[in-house]
Amino acid sequence: MSTKEKFDAIVVGAGPSGNAAAYTMAKAGLKVLQIERGEYPGSKNVQGAILYSDALEKIIPDFRDDAPLERHIIEQRVWVMDDESFVGTHYRSDTYNKPPYNRYTIIRAQFDKWFSSKVREAGALLICETTVEELLLDGERVIGVRCDRLGGEVYADVVVLADGVNSTLARKAGFHGELSPGNVALAVKEILFLPEEVIQSRFNIKEEEGVVIELMGKVTEGMVGTGFLYTNKDSLTIGVGCMLGDFKSNPARTKPYELLEKLKKHPSIAPLIEGGEMKEYAAHLIPEGGFNAVPSIFGHGWLIVGDSGGFVNAVHREGSNLAMTSGRLAAETIIEMKAAKAEPTMKTLKAYKDKMDASFVMKDLKKYRNLPDVLHGNPQFFTAYPELVNKAAKTFFTVDGIDKGTKEKEIMGSFRRARSLTGLVGDAFKLWRASR
Amino acid sequence: MSAVLSHPVNVEEKLFQNRYKVDHGRPHIQIKDAAICANDCESQACTYICPAACYKAEGNHSVTLITDGCLECGSCRVICNEHMNVAWEYPRGGHGILFKFG
Image 1 (spheres, chains in turn blue, cyan):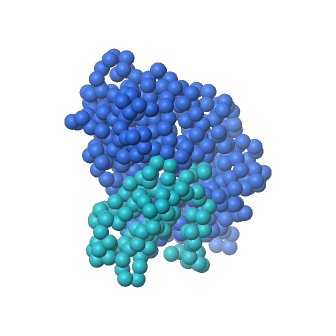
Image 2 (image 1 turned 135 degrees about the horizontal axis):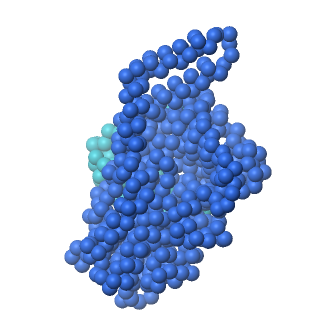
Image 3 (image 1 turned 90 degrees about the vertical axis):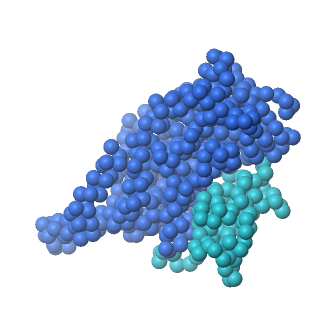
């Protein structure tokens, strides 16, 4: 490749946002170079992982024909846990068994490889095993990138930064500052292999059907965070993540893998994963600062998409769909710019932010903008309440000769002792106000 | 640590399942000034937060770093916000962790 060759766009990164951007632009006939630091797309990427169909349908409508999908989800469980027990809600519906399916479990290394094959089919040029070291600037305007291979410099009208949560390029260029420990979660996970039939019988599902379990409460030792257990075809993924700032200030100095190991040994979890053969252990940061932590996402000659822009809805456990949507909208902005023969100025590229603001991505982040602060400032949601709810269930469901009226009083008393009546009302109000 | 865990978790056993292409002699993360870790950092939080246990607290209150098992998450850099003592880059193209599943 000649380094003098100029592209319409360079996309840095081949995760969901980068692939969405590169695919959309290549499909529209733009000359696209995509640079990935991993040996293959997906080799650096980590997710739970759930794929929400809608965002991908808008990019590749017939993705179900050949995408590597594990199981479509027919049941969502949310467990609030203490050390011995859990109180859970399960939602299972046969409507989730009617195609087109709403969401799937996926294995990211396989899925990203597939998505990347579509990007190349659409006509983009992909270069792997190449780390972009910095952005090339002409004054304020980004004009290309410098790589650690290929003899260095490549040029384009626009550089799309899909370089993930650590976003080293945007930080080096001064587009935004360092991540704050209070705005980012560290999650660790393992993949455990089990025969398909064993998974199906343990989770009460048929072939191709899947279950996801979100785990809250004492599994995070009072830190703001959650755990998860997802069913793949012949494996389970189990993980737990907490805010980095909470890991840091935790007086117990708990290590992330100790938290994961403790979760795996929980009496309600252990039987579900028993005998699973662990084949990989991964860790990743998740930008969970929400609306208030989203940096500037456009400038002269550059756009930021995906985790690099902090587009994660922590409340609903959504990220890759926001990433793909941001990649698609960035691509559409550049396609329109090329069609209008406009220069890639800040003024032109502001159209990307307008599109994002009008989409569910920024609308959802805005709706929950205060929730990260409320949860962080009120650890009782992760400690006192899970214990109270579990004790209440135990009191209520244990038959021991004590009359039901006395039991009810005991339960109400336990809540009042722990949080006081004004505390209880205040907590409910805080949650309502932050999520309305 | 929780009472549920009767013995320490061996993270090396977990990392042993992973694939790496180590860039020998070219660590992508470096402690900028070892004296800051030893003298100015009370918490040495990297020694318990790093999910691959790359950072070790030594007896003389110094911190050592071996990046071979690094999962490239970025936590060490982010939590070192008081001292900014971690020089953090991605490995050279093609090197480092190679997730088989992700």
